[in-house]
Length: 232
Ligand code: DX5
Ligand code: ZN
Image 1 (cartoon, helix red, strand yellow):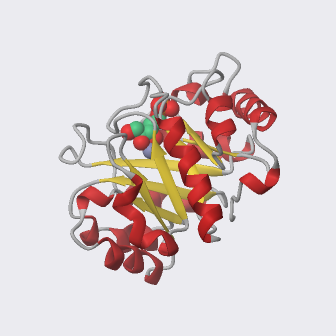
Image 2: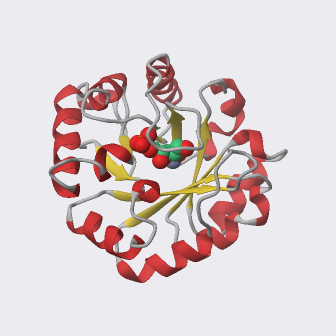
């Protein structure tokens, strides 16, 4: 399976989310990544479920909603019902991760967790079988446009080994600082999906060329098939 590209609309013009979403879909984005920030778990505030609901009629492309919020149990159902195909939470934000993942699935979405750079894989050891997606944060979440942390390549690779060893199928996403230089590194380490904000929205040739370029560079660097999964 080719590596998937998930542009983050956090880097879009906030006055034109619908137009950006349409343009990304037409350009062949595999998912639209929607970064939700509450000003508590991360320093920044972005947008909420109302935006997901408003954008849902604009496209058939899957919405990949990344919740960087405290008390996620109060909101995941709403985000799923609003039209998120994947809802990703941070394990640090909840006492009952297993229950939260099942709450997401019961609401009709796929369930993911995002690991902060300092969060070890062991934090999710006992929910691995419940996960559709693991997002390796390659920046500290909160803002677009930060530099990729190369130490995280080892974490990506370790997840591919864990997945193979346990016969699991979760997708590995990589989020933060992805550009033409870092996309091949993440792909080589075993990423299935690359999230990219600045590199897509600030590309001099526009969104479509940015997506095509990232996909080409990533696929050229990816290891042979059996190392990757990409369940969907
Ligand atoms: C960071 C977000 C990322 C971010 C990616 O808190 O989770 O999805 O928007 O943006 P770039 O690609 O600019 O690092
Ligand atoms: Zn994100």
